[in-house]
Length: 401
Image 1 (cartoon, rainbow, N blue to C red):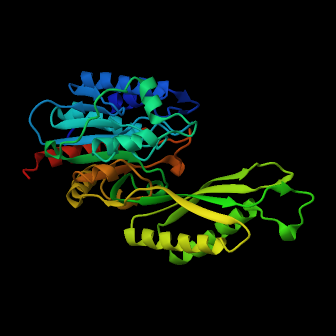
Image 2: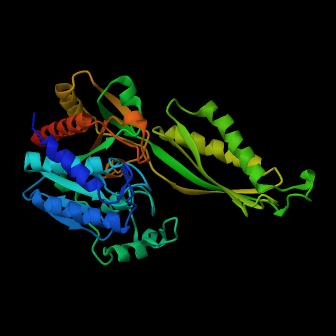
Image 3: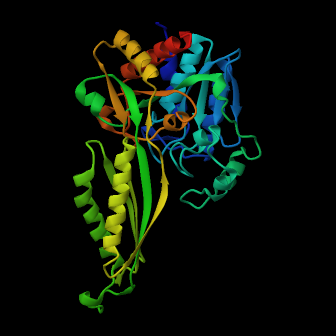
């Protein structure tokens, strides 16, 4: 089934949204800051113009619902960004949804989920919508500045509103479009990625306790240097993990802190934030065990080592039938220039997949750059991607099942 989107309107909306919180060639729009709140109200107004009934709920989700009986197709992503990041990460999928709703004229609901980027927690908005975010967890969430989620919602003007909860019977499924955030499409000369599965990630805080002391007078033989203990564990991980990892497993030490962090003091405390990702649940369990073994080995040294899990997301396979619809559309619009591929980044689609059939589509990222203000995608690829997205949505809506 073919449709005809308005590419100029699509690009105009994306560039207008990018002006809210503009930073160099990208956007700085962290969750619930004034720029993010402004973007949500701007989006709600655009939804109204498109004939949708918009709502901003008690967690900050923006949901535009079409009138008429369902089941409908839900399209979405997010509008907040990482600090000083790109103009397309998240925004692309939301504006694709808006354009498809205008193009098809029926059967499409559009959502911008709150805090996919994790400033306050893991997939706060989509988990809330799916009934997976208890009030008790909201009480504990805070960002790196120490602002609690409750305070942020109050400042944003969303506190006290009801939180929207999904009615699975209303929806035929969920579609999400996104920039690839990698270079596989660009390097292979392909223009459309059809996501087969989304990775799960396991995240940890590992703390090392030693003895703070004078850097000039404490002999090396008696030191309990927490920083050295951290480096030894990080090195052991990078030696051991390749022996058990899969071809697409990745792991990252994203932050290291030393306390007190002065050049003339042996650090008495150190901390590392560590994560690994894969689409295979069994492999993630194996990596969990390997990390536990390495931490146990590290505790035999002069420092105390403790590990705490900071959260995890579950890998999710995307619906096979929805993948087929995307592939049909891609083959019509870009013959031979599409590929099925896993997503190495987490997305709201993996949360929605717990409540309904879900699928994702990628378009190329120039140079594979994302989470940086240099992030970009060719206009032609943006427009092509939305056209494929619209065709696939129309095919799903036309199915009798």
